Length: 245
Length: 272
Figure 1 (tube, each protein chain N blue to C red):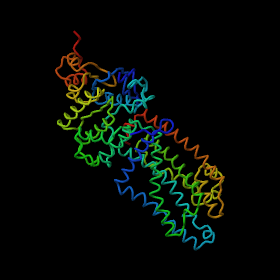
Figure 2: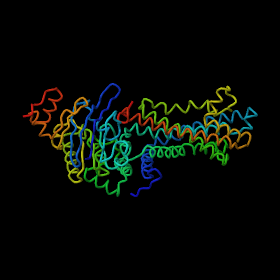
Figure 3: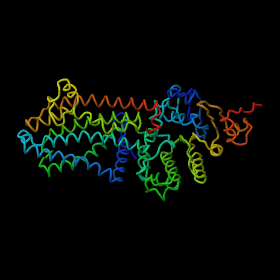
Figure 4: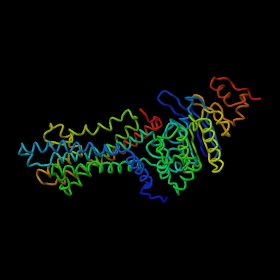
C-alpha cells in the first residue's frame, strides 16, 4: 500500500477537523478526496505529509509510520498545495535547483531541462517566480512537485484558479506521469470533472468523516446520478443515496 | 549529485542548497544588501564622533580610547548575528515557503545550520566595512585587539545564534504576528549586558541577572583589555559555558515549538 490511514482524528481546540477516518490507497492508483470547504481534506493530506500531527490514529506512508520515520519517505514523495508558494524573487531555474538539491536529484541540470521541456517552462525559466502568471506558477509548482520523480504525489487543488485550457493540460500531464512511473496520486479537489477524469477511486468527506468511498462509477450509481457534481450536491445538502438493490 | 553526510545523517548538500537559496536572494535584491551595510555604518560614525568628543574633554576616556567604538562594533556582532539568522528564517515565512521545506528531506538541524552560515555571511557584509570605517575615520583598529577578538567574537555569535534559534521557534509557532520579537528581543539584553558601562554600575540584585548573560562577560573583557591591557580568560570561559547551555536550551525549545506548530497546524497557515 502507498498510504494507510487508521482511525485518524484531528481536533483543533473545540473543532473536530477530522473524525476517526480509515482508508488505504494502493500503489499506482489515483484517488480523489472530495468534499466541501471544511470537510477535512487539507487537514487529512497535511497529516499524511507530516505537516500536522494527528490527535489520535496512525498514518503509514510507503510502509513507514509518519511522522516518526519521515526521513525514509520524504525524499520519495512530493506535494503541491495552494497553501504554499515558491520564493518569488528567485528565478524558476534557481527554485528548481534549490529543491533539486534538497531532494538529492541526480543529474539535476538534465532533470530541470527535461521538466522545462515537458511542462513548457523554457520561455520563462530564467524569470523570477513573482513575475509569472497564475498558470505559469502552477506549472512551476508542478515541476517542483515532480523534480524528484516521486512515487507518491499529494495534490491539494492542483488546478484551482487555472483557466480550463491550462487545467486540462495539467491533468493530462499528471495522467501521463502516473502511467509512466506507476506513481500513486492522492488528489484533493472541488473540481468534479477533474476527479471523474483522473481518479479510479473517490473518497467523499463531510464534516471530517468519510461519507462514501468507491469508484466514480460506483458512487454515481449508488446515488443514481449521472455526474459526480450531482452526487457532491446530494452529499452537501444531506440528500440520502438510493438504497442498495 | 553525490551525497556528503555528517554524523546523524546530516547532509552537507542540503545545508549547501539552503545557503545557495539565501545567496540567490541577496544577489537578486540590492536593497537587502544596502541595508546590511547602512545601519552598522551609521552606528559607528555616530558613536565614533561621540567618543572623539568625550576623549577631548575627559581624561579617563582619553586613556580608555576605543571603548565606545569597540563596544559598538561588538554589540553589532551580537545584534546583526541574531538578525542575520532570524531574517533568513523570516524570508521563508514571508515567501510562504516553509511548508515546501518542511515537506522536503531537509531536517530541522540542517535548516538551523544553514541559518547560522547565513548569519556569518550577512554579518561579514555588514561588519567588515564598519571596522574599516572605524579605522579610517577614528583611527581605531578593531583588529588590534588581537587573539582575544576571536574569543569575543565566538562568544557573541554563539549568543546571537541561541537567541536567533529561540526567536525563530516562536515565530514558527505564533506566526508572523510575532515578527516584532525578532527585531526587539536583543534590545532587552542591551542594558543588562552592560555594553557601554561596567557591571558594578548596576544595583547589586541586577548584577546577578547581568552575570547570567554571556555578552556581559565579553563587554567586561573588552574593557579589561582596552583599559587595563589584561585579557581575562576566566571571563571568556564562563561565557562559553553559559553559551553552551543557552544553545542546547534554544535548540530544545525550537524542537518543542516546531512540534507545537505541527499540532496547532500553523506550518500550513504560516500567516499572522
